[in-house]
Length: 156
Image (tube, rainbow, N blue to C red):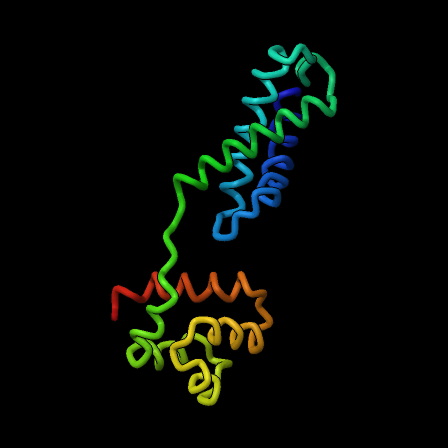
């Protein structure tokens, strides 16, 4: 039963660690799983080092939770470091604007011809326009653009 408690606590701590390290382009389920493993390992191995009792000894204490959160955060940071993706440079849109222009209209149907003319290959204006038309936060708009460019650069 204590292992189930560790897994549940680890899932919550993994989710919290995701919020704390503010990883934008990540898969939440992967982060929660990494957090579970990190919380379990740290919460199981480190309390004896710090002379505190573990959940397995029937004690669900704040120090053990903090150690587990630290373990979740460390493992999550390591996983995200290994999975890091390089962003497509902002000037790619400008350099390939004539090639991607019609594809952008097809991908983001709410953008008008006037919007496309205003963007004119400028990455920042593209983000602002997506925010206005789709209600995205700045990070989400940039994430959408990055994903689109990574997927479509092979075509251009």
